[in-house]
Length: 156
Image (cartoon, rainbow, N blue to C red; front, side, top):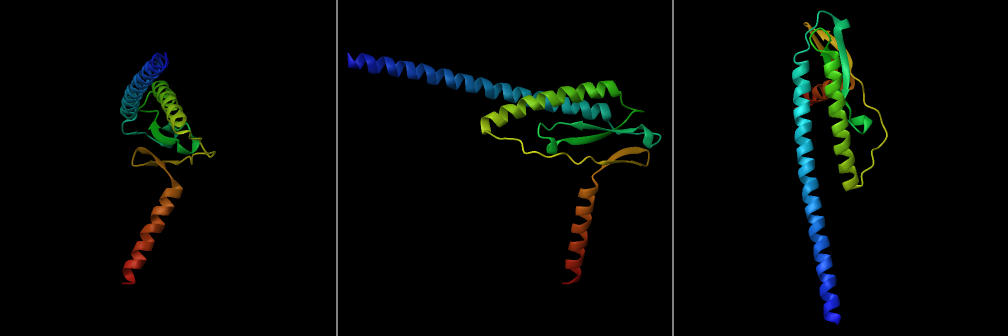
């Protein structure tokens, strides 16, 4: 009688384990599919923006993309002279929604909590007929590093 109890318990546990592995395999496949969709959406966004040519700075805009965690949000410069504002907003909205779903799934798996913070919004510049997003802090950091390297090379 005991052997039947152990055997049935073992059978139930085996079935549960196999079901769990199949669900996990499906989730990995779905997550791979979603990451491919995310890459495709990003490619469409980049194609929609192209090179953001404009006639002046008033035609330049920034749009935030990605980042369930606000500090990880990126900003893209685009030109209203070249880009359809409504189409770009639709694509970015779809991208942000899909990334949010993927990020929530990853955070649940890793038990990760998004720290509070905000993204540094870059400054828009108009240079040689092109809209450019400039991160001033990053620019200053790189300039400081170049100066430090140049000074250390002079001291040799």
